[in-house]
Amino acid sequence: MPPEKSDSSLPPGPPALPDAGNRFGWQAHEAIQNWTQSVDVKTSIVLLVEIAVAGAAASALITDGGELHGAIGLHLVVAIAAVTALAAAVACALWVVFPRLEHRLTKEHSPKGLLYFGHLQARSADDIAAALKNLTAEEERQQLAMQLHVTSGVAWRKHLWLQRSIGLLVLGTALLVVSFVAFG
Image (cartoon, rainbow, N blue to C red; front, side, top):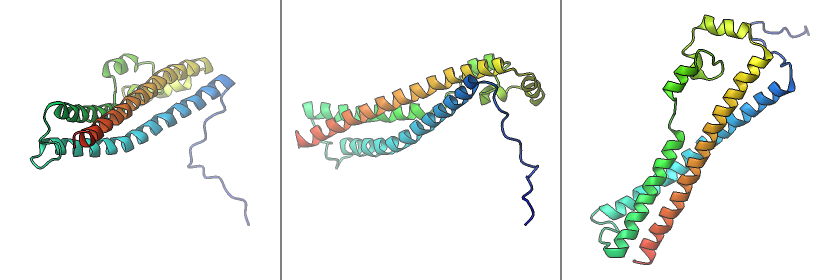
């Protein structure tokens, strides 16, 4: 058997990074990207549950034949609070997955940015090629540090809003159960 030939049409792998700090930074960047993807997946699942529960609760409250339609007094207050909490849970979950491109900041930082797609799309291919050709390990570290700072903030906010969404789902569901059980 002849030895396998390498496919020269494949792009070469990334060059070896000159120092451990940059290698670690890229590993941290990959971890943040994974956490961000994970929170988006979790949010998609939670959002489906929230929409189903909120939809059922709203239907029970506003349709003529709904179980909560005839609620009055405290019963009505609890039912409305349940639907409101569930609607707020849906809104929080939607905020997790809503793309925030921050146009003004992106435009302001695009002349120097080499990692964020919003920066790169605003630059010409020749400009990007020239910047990459002369990139030093220190400049790479600075680009990476900026990206780590920004993406970690995005991941943190997404997780925070998902946490709020789940908390409101629990509150709304508990109020809904109280509305059916205590007043039923």
